[in-house]
Length: 267
Length: 156
Ligand SMILES: Cc1cc2nc3c(=O)[nH]c(=O)nc-3n(C[C@H](O)[C@H](O)[C@H](O)COP(=O)(O)OP(=O)(O)OC[C@H]3O[C@@H](n4cnc5c(N)ncnc54)[C@H](O)[C@@H]3O)c2cc1C
Ligand code: FES
Ligand code: FES
Picture 1 (cartoon, chains in turn blue, brown):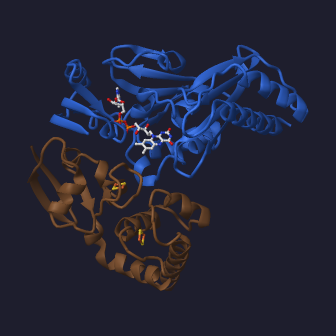
Picture 2: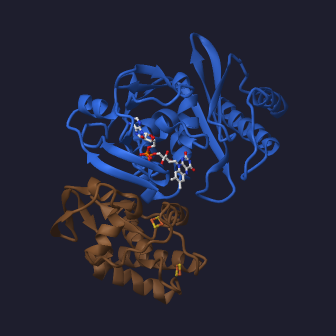
Picture 3: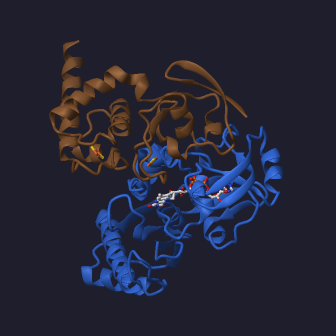
């Protein structure tokens, strides 16, 4: 159970950051995860009212404020235009609409949860996080940092011609994923590059990058070989939702399907 | 701490603890339609609208709704009763414990989605669990209710 002594709604980010430096302070996103934990919080810091609840479609990036709800991100037209249904697919299975109207992108990314669909999806894209003190950091670096007392202000996705696919497997609808896989491809520095992100292994999402030029008419056998190769570069673990072996098998199937779907689009 | 909000069109001002959850505060104010099925964000029984959006009152800190507008089933009684008749006609409720939260989310869906198909309805209501009915009767009730609403619009 969580107990909270004081609830603070700071008027500025500076004030929020200062309050958060106390060991017993916690920043609150949607509170959906934090509320289920066991903690005694002296000061809970609510970031709403600081202008962090908007998605900005800028010239080169899409900037998602940390307090945007998962539902806002799921429905964002600018993200759909760039990446198709991929982002929405990574979010729409999370509990229910009421839940997604409250859980935030900031809490989801800052939490770096092992089971996270959201982290898996954004990690495969050209994504950065903006921190109050730490500045702008690549998400693939942020993922492996230990939690600290900084505040996540926004998630920034660089625009670019990328093809994106996302898929997950769940034992029952709305449960945590047994495995979550995203594939992104595009031309980076003049070369075709593939990004593979696999989460819920059950460890947090990790990223593998490959400079592969795969012809659009590659056979299913060729694609299966590529999937086999990339799948072996991740580690897998067992828990109540599935064994390491099962997860590895599922990841191979999902990555192969996602690659096939991307290549079929280019034909 | 003192918070102020609008509850079913009435201004409320109340003292709450920093860790009080909205569900408990609303029930203490007489909104007994709100039920607690899990307290872990999984069942949807505690659904209310905050500034027009469906949310889980078991997981909202009361302190965070200062300045908001909240609607519970008590605030949309007539509309809820109308849908309730469709639910009853299809055998879509048995113990009825899940009905208030379910109805609040169906009415939120009606406001948000234009002509949802069966898959969209299922997805919108994925966070509302029912231990009794098996869902098929509820889905029939929703489809018939939505069709009746459309018919009303055409005639108006
Ligand atoms: C029952 C349940 C089922 C779930 N199922 C899934 C699932 O299937 N897939 C999935 O991807 N996710 C799932 N989640 C996780 C969920 O989607 C959110 O990621 C999670 O609730 C955190 O978001 P929040 O806004 O509630 O954050 P909070 O719970 O408020 O915060 C989480 C952590 O992040 C910190 N924090 C929050 N915002 C900031 C910020 N701006 N700066 C710095 N620190 C911050 C908090 O202090 C806390 O430590 C589930 C959660 C629950 C409770
Ligand atoms: S009581 Fe709130 S979701 Fe179950
Ligand atoms: S009717 Fe009994 S839980 Fe739904």
